Amino acid sequence: MSLNVALQMDPIEKVDIHGDSTFAMGLEAQKRGHKLYHYLVDDMSFLNGAVKAHARPLTLRRELGHHYTVEDSEHINLGDDIDVILMRQDPPFHMGYITATHILEHIHPKTLVVNNPASVRNAPEKIFLTRFPDLMPPTLITSNSTDVRAFRKEYGDIIVKPLYGNGGAGVFRITKGDQNLASLIEMFQDFYPEPFIVQKYLADVRKGDKRIILVDGKPVGAINRIPEAGEIRSNMHVGGEARKTELTPREHEICEAIGPVLKEQGQIFVGIDVIGDYLTEINVTSPTGIQEIKRFDGTDIAVLIWDAIEAKL
Image (tube, rainbow, N blue to C red; front, side, top):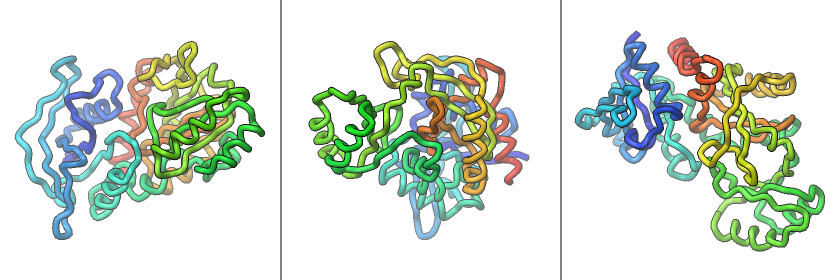
């Protein structure tokens, strides 16, 4: 089976070849004999019922400083000329992202979009989490300052973060005696048109924020991310340290609860975050972590993802 595969992602020139999950998925596609194309979301258009993109034929290689070759851009019909689209541009989840999912719906599943664009649109990370109230920590989604103060009074130590943020950006910890809460609420109200999210601070984050990868609803690997001293965020690009780990019985329970929902929705590649006993995020837009997992335990999740994609075709 030889497929035409389009990578809808951020600039290929800037990827970290040792950490980027899309890069690993592209290499695996090449290994299977598939032809790659690359385009930015801004290169995509809807024209008289057709979905088109100015895409460049792409070759990848794991060579630092020489990791890609692109040919001249072609104006291709994504519905007719492409078999699989990996929708992998990074969040934040905003109206541009939502518009892209609407456009891609016109060609999915004839052209298989991974993940299902309608399901991605309906499952922004921190909102999708609310479908599983028994698994998540105490959580408030609001723009109302009175409600935030009441939540802090009840739980004392809290986390405040953007509802549609990513990568740990804009995450604040407010302790019981902190006097900055009012100013922080004002800042969120001024800078974000949507509500923000407030959660009980989980002290177990010092032991790690575990990223678990699910493929077609089944857990296939995990890494534990330990925040730096003096830091509440465990994201690796802000200094979090990746460590080898295994799933606990509670984490298996979480995966068993959410896995069937992910599979039903066409969410082939998903990364969830777990702190202690709580599910804190469900990442469906552009999850990461597969290269780190391979380095620690040898599990090649890119292979498993492509096995799942090809099975659906």
